[in-house]
Image 1 (cartoon, rainbow, N blue to C red):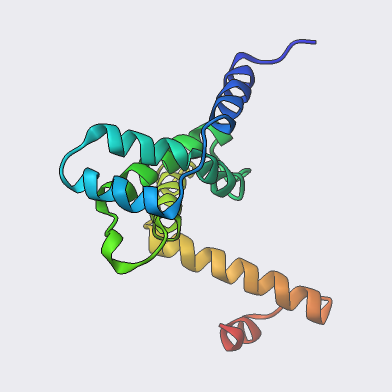
Image 2 (cartoon, rainbow, N blue to C red):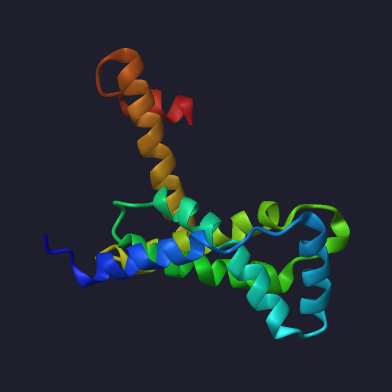
Length: 154
């Protein structure tokens, strides 16, 4: 059976990152300290250990205009930015901090690359909220909501 090259590469990537061991919270703190001192190897180790999480976040955004591989790639940029900015002294786990950066990178890529007309990210968020609210009201009332109902719910 023929499997497209891009799918084979993605499968291989997923298999490879599945082999990377997770870090303990203590290791995360130590790596964050080293990253602040400019240690590129520490940056590499911290980001590699969290690549699986990027995949899980990226999967939630499938079907919105970019391939899974592109979503993962953008999420990885967010992960690197999070690793560079992480402040270990605040007592949070790295991944709790990184999830925001990962989502931001993915949402930014979707906003810029998946539409014919580019919309600002805040407008895309507003449109998404309206669509979700409309779907919720449609399910409750078993009909499409009117503008007044939508405005009241929002």
